[in-house]
Length: 145
Image 1 (cartoon, rainbow, N blue to C red):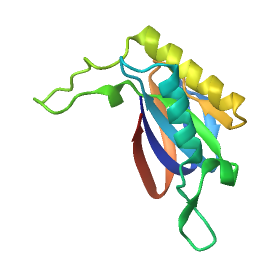
Image 2: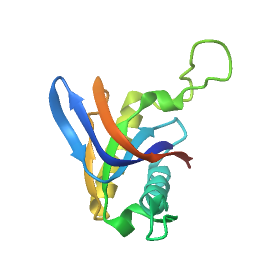
Image 3: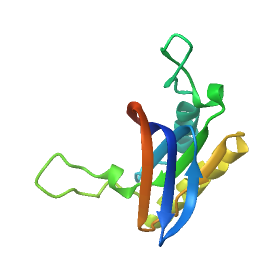
């Protein structure tokens, strides 16, 4: 499971002209699910994302986590993160989870994030989404478990 995380001052997701998810300061995570992933993968990634120290402290050092700053989390499914781009000029998605498996793990990840006390907004699984963000820094990391 992969999470491309971006530290944001704000982010939103629009589907068919409707804003379906919006956050202020926090993390936008583009979530990619692969065939080998299971619930423990989602648990591990969520723990890492919510505790990853990417927010600045009083000295300007990245020492604070999403939990420390009581920030928000915007979770957006991102099928293309599972792409193999090593060969050729077209991505291969052979390692990507099936849509049913990916949706189940995406929904599980979101439910666990909410149950952990985080303020969570989402995109819409498998929809054509327009994602807007103000990347704060810019700060972006690709986390995988």
